[in-house]
Structures are given as C-alpha cells and as structure tokens.
Length: 244
Image 1: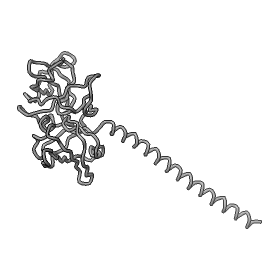
Image 2 (image 1 turned 135 degrees about the vertical axis):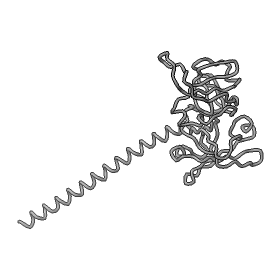
Image 3 (image 1 turned 180 degrees about the horizontal axis):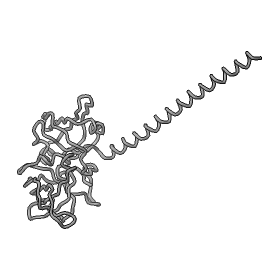
Image 4 (image 1 turned 45 degrees about the vertical axis):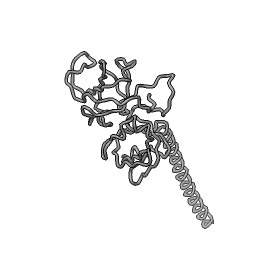
C-alpha cells in the first residue's frame, strides 16, 4: 500500500528484456527488468521490498549503491507506461507505506488500471491544469472531487467529461516541483489508478442495482402471470354461466 505522496524523482538506468534472469526453479530465463537510479528509496531497501515506480507496485530484485532493479511482468507492461521507459527518463518513486505512517494522500494500491494520454496543460497563476484523455472503463470510476493516482501521485479530480472522454486535475506549485507530470508532453501516457474505495463502492452498488433489477423483472413476470390467470378464470366463469 502507498499514499500517493511522491518521495523522490528517480532516473531510469535501463529498461530491457534480458535472457539471464534467475527463475523460481533455479534456471535462467528471459524477462523484463527495470533499473532505476534513486536515493531515498534505498533507505531500508531489501530484496523483495515493494516500491512504486510511476504508481506501479514493483518488487526489488537487486540492490546496488545507487540503484534498484525490478522485475516487470508482461501484464504490467500491458497495463502501464513502464514499457515505454528509456535510459534517462524520470520516474516518480515512493516506498511502501509503513504501518505507523501518516497518510497525507490516499490509499494507493499500486495496481494500475490502465493509461491515459495528456490532452492539454494550461497555467493559471502558479497552478497547472492538466487534462487527460481516459478510456471509458477507467473514466467510469473517476468522479469530481474524488481521488486518483496519476503516475502514483495522489491528486484530486477537478472536472469529468464522460461524453468527451477526459478528466482534469490541478497541480499547485509545490507539487509541480516534486512530480514528473509537468514534464509530460501532449500525447504522453500516464498511469491511472482511480480511488480503490470508490471502485469497490461502485461495484457493490452495481451488484445491488442488478439484484433490484432482477427482483423487479421477477415481480413484473408474477404480475403478468397473475393477470393472465385472472383472465382465464373470468373466461371460465363466463362459460359456466352461459351453460347454465
């Protein structure tokens, strides 16, 4: 679990596919490895510790004096912007949250739902507006004044346009100086993780709505059946009267 409060900006040393990675059975095989040069995240780092890189929860597989290496799974490459990283790129870095830590952001899992594209950046006084194009399956979980993690940064949603397919946020000057979002160019991809509490609430309410719809359909069917039986009973009664 993370807070979305970025601790430092790291620098990508390499992002490459290797064929000599140690597998679970002791053999060597191929896979992707991301190496990041950083400082703060090295404090207390250990093999197997979790670190969020651009909001993606990764496991440290190697530790050196000024860098950490992480294994990157194929699903992570499909869901995030990590596969596009190149040597020298800047990334947001946050260590996992301690049990006694203050949470000045919100609960961020590091489980990225997908990516969006930077549509526009507009300055207003010392703050920066950023508009991000978003797929419908992610946009449905984004609400005005709700939380969202963008490349791991805890931010508040300002506007949502579901028809046009975008949402916007605003960065104060302090945040602009401590995260990578202001460095993004138009069209660049950013990792998105809507508020997990909101997602679970939406899914729970969705299940309730589905149940209510099912009960309403069942009630309607029962009413129609009852009405049909009433008509049949009326016809039979009329026939009996005629025969008499």
